[in-house]
Length: 271
Ligand SMILES: [Zn+2]
Image 1 (cartoon, protein in one colour):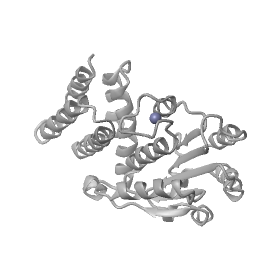
Image 2 (cartoon, rainbow, N blue to C red; image 1 turned 30 degrees about the horizontal axis):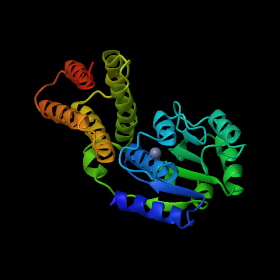
Image 3 (cartoon, rainbow, N blue to C red; image 1 turned 135 degrees about the vertical axis):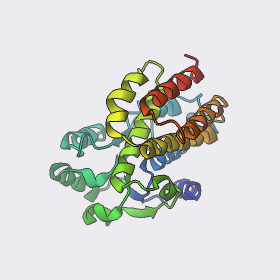
Image 4 (cartoon, rainbow, N blue to C red; image 1 turned 60 degrees about the vertical axis):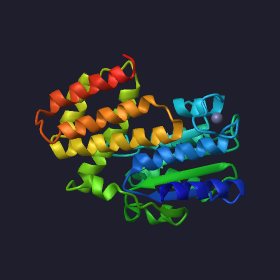
């Protein structure tokens, strides 16, 4: 379902019919973000993007988050700071060098403070030919109408409802944010996950249900990655996550469980 939406966008791009800005409404912001990145890779790849393009420099730069013409903005703390918007404008002041477009992605645009919002609005009001924008929100009604009206709205329905279970919107949002970060940590071979478990995860997620949600979201990210890369090492990781989701039915010591989870995931990384 969600895949179809992105396939259509790709077709629109090739027909030169993409809008200047899209607003996605979805329960799963991280998954949508990963799909947007994949779409961008398909648009920009120098060697006709195939599954797991790890040859071309562009896809590589995008994967590393080092492509200068692609800027992701997300809240730091409770809001999106004006500084982030300033940096975006600075980055886009010049025409892109490696790509056809300058592309920005804003997660949770409703979190822009007034200053950021005004700066961003000016930017949106004068759309430039080679700038593409993607906004991702969980609820379009929380996004300022002046932004909504300047974007093409795409509603994504996915299975997130069942993932959310009995969690509140806020708890679920915090699981999603941490799942995104946790995934990065798990893939970063130098990071100390035990420390991260104790100082971040267990501070913010205190119930078993929240941890279940966290692991399910991470599972989805790996599953998506597998569909994209066909890397069989990921199957190993999916199995580990399944095992721990099962253990969560019995084991109440979340700290111990997460630490041993992190160790096994590290081993799967060849640590
Ligand atoms: Zn490529």
